[in-house]
Image 1 (cartoon, rainbow, N blue to C red):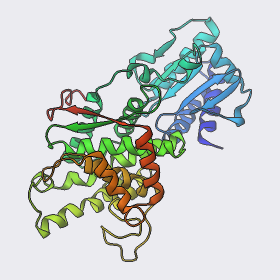
Image 2 (cartoon, helix red, strand yellow):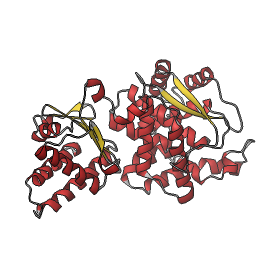
Image 3 (tube, one colour):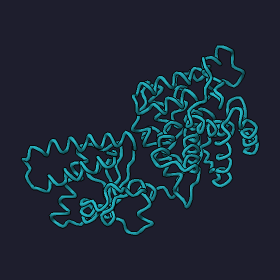
Amino acid sequence: MRQPVAFLDSLGRHLELVTGGDADNPTLEAGILELMSALQMLLRLNAFPVFEFREGDVIYDGELMPELQRWEWSLKLAEAGVERLKVTPGTTRDDMEGFVDEVVSRLTLDVQGATARELRGQTGLQFQALVDESTAAQSPLQDMAAEFDLQEEMGVGHWLHEEVTAHGRIPIAETSAAVELLSVAMHSEAGVIIPLVELKEVDQYTTTHSMNVSCLSMALAESLGYGPTDVRMIGEAALLHDVGKARIPLEVLNKPGKLTDDEWQVIQGHTVEGARMLLAEGPRMELAATVAYEHHLSWEGEGYPRLAIPRQPHRVSRLIQVCDVFDALRTRRPFRPPWPQGRAISYLKDRSGTYHDPEFVDAFLAMIKEWEPRRVTLDDAVEGVAAA
């Protein structure tokens, strides 16, 4: 059984138990435990699942679920004003029990709620009634992001980098949330735009570069027809591709002059360090660990870290690598000014088929032509970092 189906099946069974009205029913505890287990399994595959319930059908991340056609609880949830349900990694048992209580109250007492509501002040579960098709296709976060300056995204990105640097841990839920913020910013206007951050100085290079590569990689994945879940996983892997640089001293990372052989060895070590850190977080980060390890390997397996037997890197590593190189060239560094876009594009074309996968170079250049990146210049001192 697919995880989205398993989650909704558990939700329907638990709602059935609760509507029975027997608060002492011993199966209620087992029901909520089963529901939360199904939710956690779903969130491992999709950090931000979105369901819509329309005329007995269920739509998951924009696709009809044939397994749940004419599902009884699709009709009942819509009747309760829950036509769109969004779940996030922060969902707790209290959130879920509050949601279930709200649905049961609406069904049994005909209580009319707000069009969109967050339960108990939490952000784990959001639901709403669909006013029209244009509203149905847009999340509440997107409504708030019609105008953006990337300040909040920059603050979250900086906080993530500081957490890794200070504690050697990768906040997985917050990483998913950061990718969601970037995805919302990309879709805040008609069509896809690619919001990129650039700084007047270079102190936050690793943070801004990783955010930019995440945006570019998600946009490229979308242009190639990847589904929403895969796009978000690619966005996470891109955001974390340079996480190993948190182990590199800043005086080496931002050195304006030529690196010594020893310093260059330290820089190269960020691929292995990043993969180790990500693998330590468990299976959820395996793709990100692969990208962290391989993003400096050429299409033919050359580069670093040196492989005993050269092989072609993972497909996602090759996709992200094109975005990584483009943004690195377009960004101001301690040792050189940013390259003009035309020169960066020519560089990618020249290395297509040797260093870069030509499929992704061609797709990237077509995307850049169609979706012009918007560059937002921020000061190095990022306001709101403490709040983030």
